[in-house]
Image (cartoon, rainbow, N blue to C red):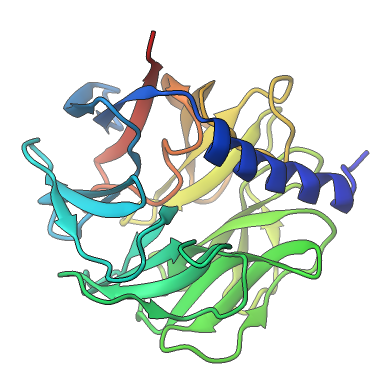
Length: 302
């Protein structure tokens, strides 16, 4: 039986509220993993919460959010550098770099509920793109002209797109239940997302106009946030044990797996087992050469 829309929406909202108010103190480990060998490399350990690494197109830096702000750090490690975002000072872990590396799209909740903004790559004042809230950014089109996001409109979380310069939003999904994580594939032809319409959270794909919505992962887990590699061959995602987490929830501090699947769909394989979840792999963190992934694992402070 499919979970009801009401229950899923309540679970989604409760998860965000609980995580914001009652997050335990953690040690964050920013790591890189080789997708062929599974070898993990520690970039830097932090005595506080960091989340959701992006990889810059030049391969030199990792981008992450922490304490409501955006930072970059050399891939080899070192000292983080603040990326100014102006009056946007309560960023969540939904931030994405444009394919050409010239700007960020971010989600920020300084004014209350999450809204989508854009910011130049070098930093600057955040420009509001989605006056309606809540809106959670997840993707930028390959030409940089369109943003994709998950948004609650009248009690239903669906996938929307909007021009990068602002304008009218367009709804792409209308199925009952949560549709989340919409991200543009590098082939410029598809948007990947994760809905609960099959009973579990799974990775799906659709055309840019919302047509031909197709389930791509089929297993017994709850699979969140599919990310396509730059060469278009592989998809990474976070897998939760379905007996531990409701399909409409992606909490922090759980035993999870990073899995890889062909972009044509099929059986996924486990790349990394870790303690994490929320914050580990919310946004695309593939290296430009498609050979490595960046992610964050966690350890609860004693």
